[in-house]
Length: 390
Image 1 (tube, rainbow, N blue to C red):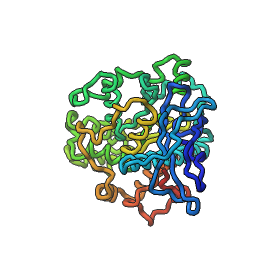
Image 2 (tube, rainbow, N blue to C red; image 1 turned 45 degrees about the horizontal axis):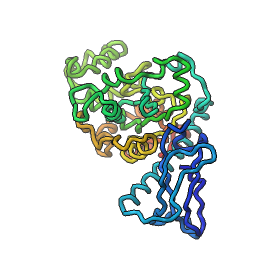
Image 3 (cartoon, helix red, strand yellow; image 1 turned 60 degrees about the horizontal axis):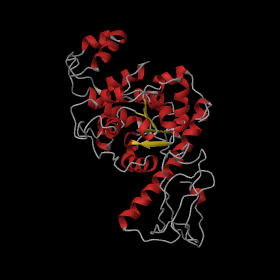
Image 4 (cartoon, one colour; image 1 turned 30 degrees about the vertical axis):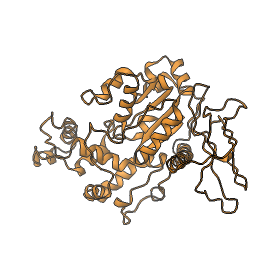
């Protein structure tokens, strides 16, 4: 919703005209595009604080075309507590979207001297690089998935909607099934791909890079025997890296001893072509090229997913799962686990990791988590200014 349209005066606001400009939280291209929940608040004219009551119900939530506004009730209606809280939640989510997009555009300009645009026509090479973007034609969506950010749940959600898998099916690989079911922009004709990038609703979900990296380590390597390729398929890459860079060190360590978090972090920082599970997120989703309508975060995934699905589709059956039963819960974002693992990282390696993550942190409004912050480190002025935004 365009919150600038909400008037804050003595009268209770009873209508909001939704706009379709590029600043809209979920921009659409035509009548079949996203559906927007029209949320209207009651404000106190003296304090400008949000009151407890949200009092106007929209009867028609379709996006506005031209001069035709959404149809709203001309009379305030009492909402029960649950509906009231849900409405407030959606307002918070859409407000956060404005912040996230603003942060992204500013960072794109300062880091790369470019900004996401709907008008930019991508080359075949650029489209081919969008290997993590799935075209969901049924809902006119383009979803860029990031490993370790709930992508299995999103893939399952759409596969179930297409009738390809059952919601209770835990045997099939959602990644293999989605690769077969959904095309990427690079697999389409160039004109068609650019048309869909312009017309469809583009969305992605990201995560604080520090917790995402720890989650990847704990799921893929922690406690696993590097000699057992079946138990630890990702360990082979670390072993090969040590053979090339420090064979003496590798020879001196127990070959069956699991790789430590420190060893893993050194390996990740040094990789020129890192694995998708720990490569930086902006390289997977190209946020300074693609104009994303919705930027979700793992840290607020339930709120973001609910609002996005209500707003961008007209399918009330789409529900993001509370948890993914097919995967172990690593709880890598908890302060306890963050401290436990990151305190083993030497200062010089930690500084290198901050530099490695810097663009992701800037683009998506993340900071170094307080639990692992090291005030004694001498960081650059730009690194010190990193803030949690949106």
